[in-house]
Image 1 (cartoon, each protein chain N blue to C red):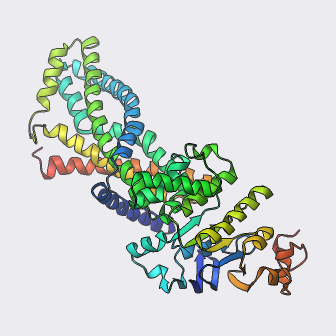
Image 2 (cartoon, rainbow over the protein chains, first blue to last red; image 1 turned 90 degrees about the vertical axis):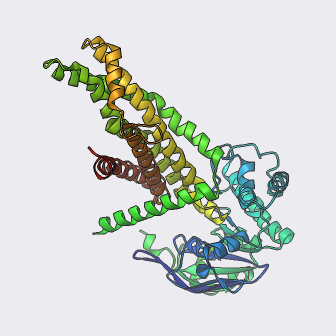
Image 3 (cartoon, one colour; image 1 turned 180 degrees about the horizontal axis):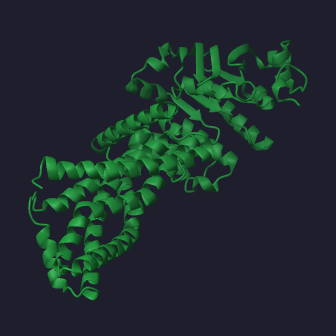
Length: 251
Length: 260
């Protein structure tokens, strides 16, 4: 369903992605792991067309996202949801208005149906009764869940999650992981999750890909990753101090 | 050379944004948001515009009056104050105030949204940030710049007439007669050229400076520091553009198409 084919992306002198290739099958949850700054978020952003690769192709159902017209890209994005790290709620709209925003702007449904679907999405993420609150009144975990409600309100086929549990307490992180699994079970969505949190990876992943130095260096099931022989994968998965990762940061 | 390239890039993006925002006014007008912005950003600037205009009118009238009183020509004060405000001072002063009160706020608001990925969230939802954020802001400031300039012109003349009467012994009636006489000529839709020239100039300035604020906000990057940088750039670029528009518009209306 999603295929990145030798994608490269640089910001000035900094090469973030180098010939990065990975595939995600329909209905699959792929978790992309890797150290900070290895290009995980950039990878997600290229899938949804927020970043244009310098080289390579990003194909969704065989269509190159970056060759699409403005109208085509809008149609493609309508099939996708994106959960930002911070939730990225519009701060002058209430939670309910934020969740209803993609439906209201899409002009596809009458007002009462929009309100009903927004409330249902909030209910699905465990935020029933919060529609009149402002984003500033929510905790970090609630913001992420509200962001998730906004991502699923259009019932997308694909959801991209950018570090959905970073900065959350273990219980809230577990709740978010449960939601990701539920999205797949209830809506049958294809998911790409960017994460550092190995416990969460084991809970949600069908398959895991590890990014290192802008390239995918390993893919496999969570259990294959747990027992990986590759020293980089092994060190990351077990959070070991000794190994090839993070040498540049050591005293 | 890098800064020059970035300046051209910024100017190009601002021009693109201004064109696109104007397209959205007709394609998807957001009247409720525009009206709220007109109140929030424009009408709330009215007190400061009125105070500055009143005192500016007083200062202009006092300084000019002291000079011309030596020749017994205080009757020209109405003409001087009216012409100065209607042609140049009203639009210039109003838009400079709007840069400080509104354009900087636009850049900061949108810049903060950009660095916190809210504008990306809009794009992901297939909502064009130019249509959603910039178009209502540009329209509201275009209209409010014009209306506030009209207020500034009137209040400035009022300030001038108070000083002319109280300090220089010129009766109100003569001041206002001379002021209104001086504004006659070159009518267009019933408005004298000096007045509509100034008001159109203010609207154009409002349109451009609002576009600069929004464009800088949408191009912000690098966290809180980046937001501060984009606000500074928006203020500097807006002030420069006000000067450029002020001169060129005056040349256009009084030299190219006028008879002065």
